[in-house]
Image (tube, rainbow, N blue to C red; front, side, top):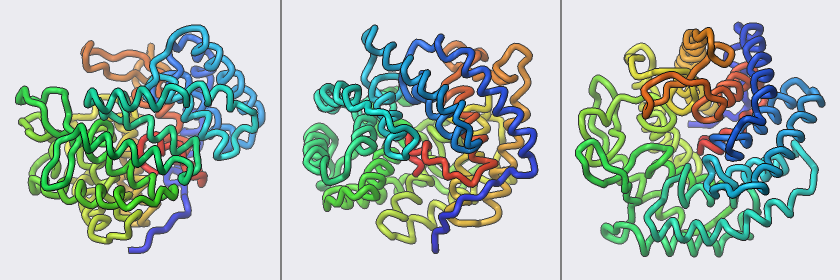
Length: 404
C-alpha cells in the first residue's frame, strides 16, 4: 500500500470556529506560562514553546515568534535557577528536545549550544542509571533521552551510543530465546509486574523509537532485529475482536486493561507503532494490521464512555489526531471521517465556565477536573492538534509522541 505524504486539513468546514478557539488558547498560554513550575516538553513551558512555533508558522506572524523567544528565555533562566529533573516529560531532556527541534526545523537561529551541552553532559549518565534501575519509560525514564539525542544529533554521530544503550538493555531486560522485552515494574490490575503495551510507557513505544532512529539514518542491524522480534511478540498478544479493544494495556491483564481509545494506552497507540515500523522496514503485513486495528476502532463501533476530557493523552483530541495521522498516510476516507467525528467531540468538552477556554482535564489521582496548560494533558496539546486539523503544515511536533 502506497503511503501518501501530502498533509491536508480535515476540518476546513469548521476553520472559523477552530481559529477562534486557538486564538483564545494562545491568550491563555501567554497570560499563564510564567506560572508553570516545570520546563519540560509534555508538562511545562517546553510544550508551550512548541505551540508558538507552529502557530507562528501557520499564521506567518512574527509577533508569535517573538513570544516564543520570550518564553524560551524564561524557560532557560528558570531551569538555571533551580534543580530540574532530566526526563522528557517535565525536565531538561524535554526542554532540550524542544530547542533541538526548533533549530532542526528552522524555527529559530539562535545559538543555544551552551544550553544543549549542559543537558548533554548529564543525559547519558542518567539514562544508563535508569536502565540499570529498569526505568525504561519513554516519558519519565531512559528511552526519552534517546529521542532527545536523535533530535539533537545526526544519526552517524550517535551510532556508538545506540550500541551501548542496546547492550545495556540486553544486560538488564528479560530474555526469551535471544530476544528481550522491557519489563514494566508498575503493578498491573492483578498486582503483578509484567509487560506494558502502551505507546507512552511500553513496548509499542520502544518499537516506534527504534523505527524513528532508523528513519533518521541510524542503520544498525541490531535495531531492525529488535523491531522484528518485538513486533512478533506484540502481534501474539491480540485477544481477538471483543466489545472494547483488540490489544490489552498490559500483560498480564485484568478486566480494566482493555477499552481505552487514546495515545497513551489502547489499540490506537499499538496501531500507530505498527504502521511506523511497517513503513520503516517496508513490511506491508504490519501496515495492514495497523490499518485493520484503526478500522476496528471507528466511532461506529466504539463506545465513548472512557473519554473524560479533550486532552491529547487519552481525551477526545487523541483519537482525532491519531486518525488524522493515519488518514494523511493512507488517504482512506473512513479515517478522515473518524478524525472529524472526534474533533467535533472536542467541542463538546469545551463546557467548563471556569476552565481555560472552557476546557478542563480530568485528574485521575484526585478524581476531579482541573485547569491544565500541558501539552500532554491540557490546553497546549489541544491547541497544537487543532492547528493541524485546519492546516497543510505537517505536525512534526508529534514526534514527541512517537507518531512521526
